[in-house]
Amino acid sequence: MTHARTRPRPLSLDEVRARLGEPEGTATDKIIDHIDDQFRRFIAHSPFLTMATSDAAGRADCTPRGDYPGFVKVLDAHTLAIPDRPGNRIADSFRNLAENDGIGLLFLIPGMREVLRVNGRGYPTDEPDVLARMQTEGRTPELAIVVEVEQAYGHCGRAVIRSRLWDPASQALADEMPTAGEMFTAQLGLDIPPETLDNALEDGYRKLY
Image (cartoon, rainbow, N blue to C red; front, top):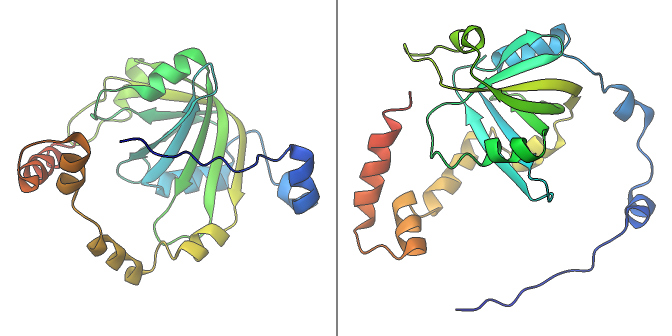
């Protein structure tokens, strides 16, 4: 099956600025180059982040990372470490960082509208002292991603408010979705009952560490 491709007209940065205008001073003044006490506290309470990387050609990837609150460690005011927990082993983020060390993080705290953004340079490490700080459920990760912080700033809660992300009523949207097993069997053309894959996924979720 072929799918028609739609490509709306791209705008130049000048055209975008003509529509948006220039940012207010507070929007740029709040950006700092380190993790201060307030951001350290935010990271200590965050159980979830999204991590954006891209390869040498600029092809982007964004991956979710989550664990107990404070799973990301602040090594010092300019350095973070993110544990690499068991996953699909595709290693997109590691491959990208080998080609392009730019990295962007977005930290969330359940129930909080504001988010924390951190941008910088990243690389993998197997430094034992770093990994030991990330032991969870008796397991120590094999690798961690170190982030050298270049920018850190809080982002206002408009997107979270508009999305009603923390509104319990929004969880009803999940009931309208097919299960993961139904989606994957359809996409991959698998000749197995969807519930078989759902059960396998649930079994895997029980082995998070």
